[in-house]
Length: 88
Image (cartoon, rainbow, N blue to C red; front, side, top):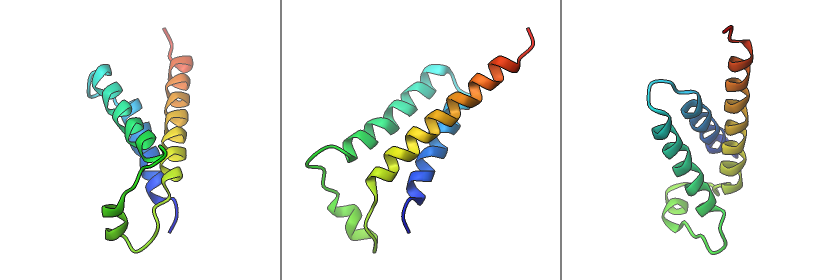
């Protein structure tokens, strides 16, 4: 196990980014919350003893960051492709 949660963070960010069911500002708030969580996890002095006690393996917090950044990149590329291929 290493990185599954990072992939989930990526899917969440990409999915919210391309979501058309909700207003843009709601999607923006959700993405901001995910990145606030990831930044908090990667800040110096962050300790998650409760989470570590629940899981039998170490949590790779950097995988959350890389997954969220990859989801952001893929979501933006998807939106760019849609915009470029849309006929006006």
